[in-house]
Amino acid sequence: MMSEMPIGVMMSAGWTLDQLRQVRDLGFDNVQIHAPYEDVLEDDSRRSALIQDIRSVRIQITTVFAGFSGESYADIPTVRDTVGYLNPSMREERMRITERISDFAGALDVGKVAAHIGFVPDDPDHPDHHAMVQCVRRLADYCGRNGQDFCLETGQETAAALDHFLKTLNRENVGVNFDPANMILYGSGEPIEALGIVANYVVSVHAKDGKGPPGEGQLGTEYPLGSGDVGMDRFIAKLKQIGYRGPITMEREIPDWDRKVRDLVQGRKLLESLM
Ligand code: MG
Image (cartoon, helix red, strand yellow):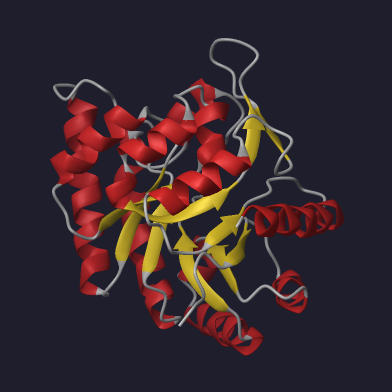
């Protein structure tokens, strides 16, 4: 049984086993991990070896995050074209890969698979809206057969649009991985208010901070916890208010690992002081 709101770490794309051990040795007992890419997922011996290696670290994996080669977060139009399942030319292939990721997560006894599904058009009559509903239902049902929730990372739509999409999906095992900074980075609304709107669906959260975009079509900038505009005190208070008890997974999206470790240690101090 985990304590309430245990603090964990998101092992972003490109993470290594050494880094996973280092996070464990820093005293974290839970992480989310980015899934391996197709080259590992579809190679039986490499996949099995990775599963053994991860198990040997003895840290709880709370969620496996799906991600795909070719995704880019350079600016909003690029995100629209390359991220998740929105682009019809990649949709079927990525759904197939996500099913392999669900199996991979199952082999690690992980009960949640998450993804940035991409921008869902606000207009329910838009053909891509319907396609995304069908896509997420299929993935949720696949995960359901593996005893898993399928979780949508927030940020690329407003909370009202996400709430509407979730209701349209009508699937018990679809949840939200709530990332307050993404709401700011994508300019999709005030995160604490958004958390209240989708509260009933929130099954996991990222502790991440950031400041808004400098202009139209651009993305904002991520900052260390406490240095952006989320308001970590308000975020933690709101999580308590909605009765959230799951892990708080710190996410720091910078390539410099040593700096990231320093920020994670600092971030944990901040979070502990607010709980
Ligand atoms: Mg996130």
